[in-house]
Image (cartoon, rainbow, N blue to C red; front, side, top):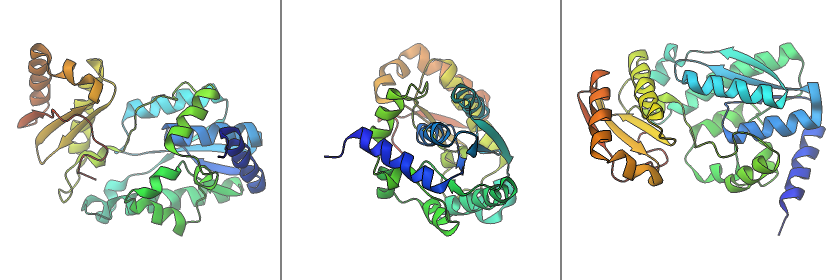
Length: 266
């Protein structure tokens, strides 16, 4: 059995071979670990880049900025807008492919400007088991995945992140706001903003793992399995339902099954 320390050493070796890297840094734990290790291995030759668009909640951007400061790495912002891409807005099974193609095209241009050696992302070994069209875009643009190359699973990423002192090691899984919109329903700026506001309501109520799925105007609320009891407390049910209706949702359903990865929408 390969020890976690050996996998860390493998990742450091891979990064040294690349000599300099541009890290596609979303603020999630996977890309944060890559950014941390890249910075410790390559110093100023590692740069993190966060793509900012209508699909990224503002709270996620602020959290990403904070962690980058804690790491001490150079952190840049890349402005993008997938809503200008008709194939993305259509919201079919290829949505993520078009989103990632747009991202990597922008990162490739930035990599050239900064004269860096490689673009790397936070894909981990477990991600390869999922249906992820974005992975195809990554391969087409020559993006490297150090976590995969070092055979690091999601659980190992969290364990290593905790060991290295990353403040977000236990951060719940996140995904872009477009993943909340039912497949086949064209994505609009208004929908994304409404979903962001709705999830902010849940976060303000103290929930940590949250999703508000927009089924063409009907909200389906998911929270972590360990948070379901709090969600279904009568006063909480009424408060959340009323607040989400105020945001413009025609109906609100509190899902008794709790949060499920992808939730059937993406």
